[in-house]
Length: 437
Ligand code: AMP
Image (cartoon, rainbow, N blue to C red):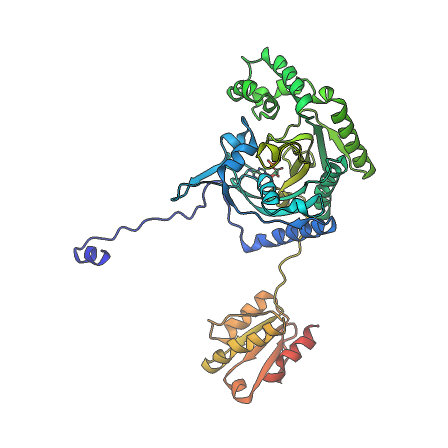
């Protein structure tokens, strides 16, 4: 086809591929990796200390898992899911969170037969078709912790809140603040919803269009409205805490007592409902400093398994999720040093065809000895390679030329003082090991 066009004297049309990633979706470059490594290390350390086992669920799931989980009137369910139809006719979704998938995996793999509760953690990509802005991406990553099964004991709510906070402390994030609320149970929440509807019934001509709909579809979501016009009504709305039944009140009090015991400072925010619909009783969010962009949040969701049809009746579950990109932004803003990627201390310089041929295998000997070596195999001149070695800040350069190949030796050059020494090539790994110790 292209040849024909050339013969006909026509220029071939080349499709221009954009260098941009899709809106709200980012590349993570090598220079950023130390932040991710630091975070992943802290997550693993925290999870392992509290005996949480890692769970990886797929990025693609059946769409109905999330449709059912998120609840009517939530942004995630209504606007934010990336849904795709496969050739086979399956309707799949790029997961907008992990919690329902963690529950699915728990029941699918019979985890209830193991010691209860099951303590699980995850780290992975999440997709939500939101309006991108600072701290709000369309592909982001969440670290999450879930305690599934066992008892609905408030100590687990406190444990989840505690370890979410400890993870951020482990990362040295300053000025942490926890906001907390209780959303009650099915019984007391029904009473509260009526109170809320009564309160909003006189304000319907003043609230945003979304809130007008929320009023009938899912009144609790009125408290989750981000529209500035509705802020004042949210502020003055009746507090859910005053509507809690005796049992939920007792549960909430116990959570607070455990947090006191752990010396965790918290604020009770009676308007906190969180963006997803499945929470009952405890909900919380964690912030750093004065900012109102949450680093993470979580809560109890004892009805989710039943809503999804996995189990009849209450299934105790409590969990949290923290945003990796927001945590990393915070590390940067607060100037928290992360360990840079360790650089090689050795640079291998080869000069001439024979040396180059042998160099590739010699570097392998260093790999077997677990010593990292940098090189520029495509370069020919000694000067160019020495310059690079200097730029990379290595401690020693190894110089291997025609003569060294012939002599079965190699030169080791101290990059600090420029002194050089010839060493038998078969001893070079041992020699380097000794010198860089
Ligand atoms: P959620 O699953 O909505 O409870 O969110 C838990 C945490 O994930 C939030 O506190 C944020 O740190 C993070 N997060 C949620 N949505 C986004 C987003 N669009 N972009 C970046 N991080 C997000």
